Image (cartoon, one colour):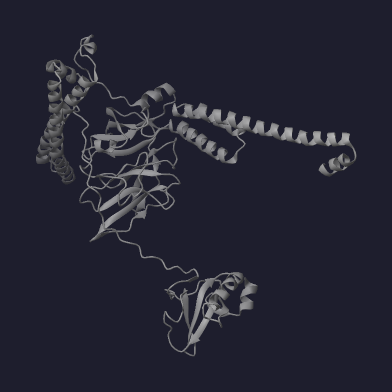
Length: 554
């Protein structure tokens, strides 16, 4: 087309104008195609956003339809992969509505993402802030600490691999050193992050969160069961609704006393916060289908069941003026009261455990009761310390009010604090554990692997293993002598191999090259390094062959 247009244009002005129109037409057509492509992308983006909104609102079937429409419009192959992944998440969500558990919700409280894990009733002073010796990379939105209790001999933890993807690692104490950490098996490892691994009290289950396994988006919760036959962790199973959701769900934990199940989720939370849920433990959960979206939304809200409470006057909400100073004081009063209630509840629980221990003839039950008593006894000093600090802070606020001339009606404040709804038969209260000290561990160091690539170094190196690999291999022979060579003799070459000949001579070669062109490219480097008589030799499956034969086989 272009040669014809140019030829006509060369001999005729009007034809030149025609040629210009032809080129302009191409330009217009190109612009039109570019605009159409941009319009398709914008429509696809809009459909993806709509699909995301529907998926996050548990309307999975409708979300799938939106993603399908977006796929029909999206011209970019990279974007298509991302949309396909979203569609799969929505399809997973729709599938998992057939397998839903309805728990009894005991409590729910919103905490900061920075320290929510400290409100779990796990061993005190055991959460070690990231970065630390095991997890050297900080800044992750969820992985803020590593759980390492004092005295433990085995640690499962999340940390980045060499590509920056968080995987689950394991290490154990061996006499004086911690073993070199190792990744868990390929079934537990995904292309995206895994965080907060927790081993069950009996050691048979591992709970963790993953953003890369079969799920609905964000981090979902999974359980892997220990396989005695293979001696390894089994295929992870998504724990489904209400534990997993299209949001970020992390840190699943069953309390050792067999009373509660806990996990955290950012569903319905600001960007810097996360809810911690306390559910009644159920060792035989019954699952069923939930197809009504409103019913599913209500279930996933996991609002605590509110027990019957004494009647409260209708005007009580307005009975106390709501100002920041008074609210701060009331919150501290509530904290002190909650800590006192928790300490009392721990005392009652320990007395109950001691009574059951005295009456029990079951060895396994006695072990669990003894461990529970020890755990609670160990937690009480920390609770008392928290109560002491909270009481001191309350007194400081009272002194501040007194200094500023603020008058407080203590009776009305306490009456307001008493209105906090706490299930009478559960006595569950959140309390904050102390973070652990800086993590200090002596870990085995890996022995560096010998590098068999050709190099000229300040000091040469003999090969650690003189065995040649299978197949065709080329080397450069540097000399053959009647006695063993020294490092000085090899002039910085690496790796240098020794071959003993039948007549007892010591023959030395350097390098491992798979192609003739590769060995030829390095020959002059060896010769100019002081080995003017160096030449190429070849081997097949470790045995010498003529170089021409090797080239033909290559």
